[in-house]
Length: 397
Ligand SMILES: [Fe+2]
Image (tube, rainbow, N blue to C red; front, side):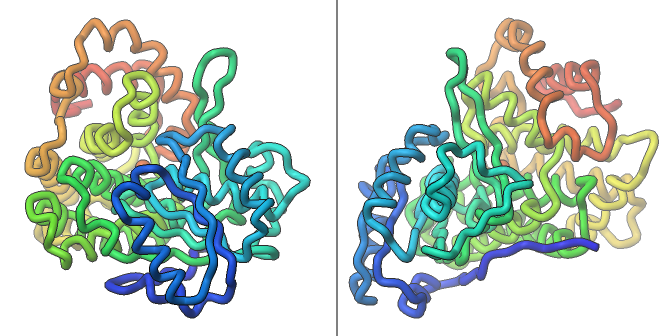
């Protein structure tokens, strides 16, 4: 028996109009200063005004949102007493909105620690949560994950909380918000969506519902990401990429990410590399490592199926050849969209890598995404992968 969790997804041009049909009069909006200054918040509030809804805004979400920020927003939310909570922005704003929703619905909770898979959450009693993504990448509008940063003993710790009760009631996936995204952000977030889709295909939690969404998301991203990067005003490309990111979110939200995200989270924590850049860098190495598994051909078969389904390989190709073709296509896409193919290209020195290697490996070994990885991996393999990643060498072990 398996479950597939999803919000009600409203997508495509004018998806925002759906707000008019959602019951509720008082909206508490959670967002970041950039969304406000770019005028994206105005697009939302104009629509709310036209629907006769009132609103109050919390616009202080920072990148990698901090636990304290969640508590301040939750207090403001409780004072306002809304019947709708709207998260608008990238993953940080959406994750903060999810956490605020839980603390609003459960005033007895004093900490985000209460958001965990075994908690019996009763969200939706006081307010519905509407998630509106403004980038095409994280898929946070569809998932049950909440990533919050806590400072503990002088070090920043990323709390990866999750519960199906934080899945938004609605995901409004309207491409209007992505029109002005700069090329670098478009590429990085697009690669995040690609990594979600590829990594969950080979996860130990893979399932047929996720597979279908992941493969179509991969096809859309390969086809439309270069266009969205080079011609950002192509709204067809923007719309289909936005859809693909939510599809990737649904796919990995129900099947989990694997090795690439484990290594990318470690690189992000140590070298402060943006998430999209880090997962984009790690993806081909993670794919190569999994499809070279000497003990099982399951990843090779799955990546081959994706390669053939999206038209990168011929149906007559051997699985190993077809899987390699998808890896090559991903490497091509890195170049085409200007993402660094190696740690060296990212400006990290060999000394920096050597100095931080043990810490990187520890973080990888502690990652839940490593547990979901289909090929067994330990300290020696992680070390080798980071070394190969440094110089951009093809994984041959
Ligand atoms: Fe991601």
